[in-house]
Structure formats: structure tokens, C-alpha cells
Image (cartoon, one colour):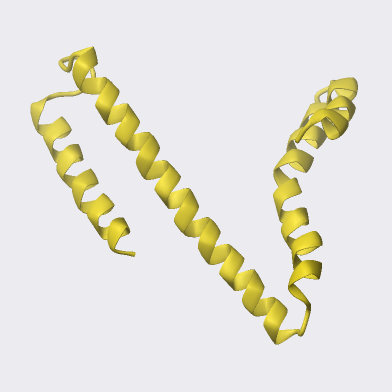
Length: 109
């Protein structure tokens, strides 16, 4: 949790410096690349933080309802992992790309 506070503090400082000293027009590529990489690291940190809390919450639900961990992993967590693929494939099928949607069902990870 401490890394989250440190990340927020550094982000606020970096954002204030970018606002103070100009936008993308006045910064060189050498200044923008570290900002973009730092943004990627911050985004990955948030995804890790939220994902860990969601897994803990599902483990708590499994303990409350006395569902074994392997069953939770094979059902609830697997369904949650597949929701993004489902929405993407349905959207492709609705846009008239049914073959692509069906192919993505079997070819996707």
C-alpha cells in the first residue's frame, strides 16, 4: 500500500511540472518518453492493486458461502476473465463480422 502513496505523490509532482513547464508542444521527445513510460507503470500498478483486491473479495465470498478455492477459480474467476472477450466477440458479430467473432472465440487466449 505504501507504493501506492509514493506513486500518487510522484504522479502529482510530475503532473504539476508538466503543467507548469508546458504541454506536448513545448516538451521534447526526450522528456515525453519518460513521462509515457511512467504513465504505463502507474497504470500497471493500479491494475495490479485493483485485481488483487477483487481476487481477495472473491476468496472472501468463497469462504462465506463455503465454496472450495478450486471451484471458485474454475468458475467465477474464469467467467470474469472471459467477459472482455465475450463483449468484444458479440460486438464484432453485431457489426456484421460474425466470422471474425466466431474465430476469436476459438483463437483467443
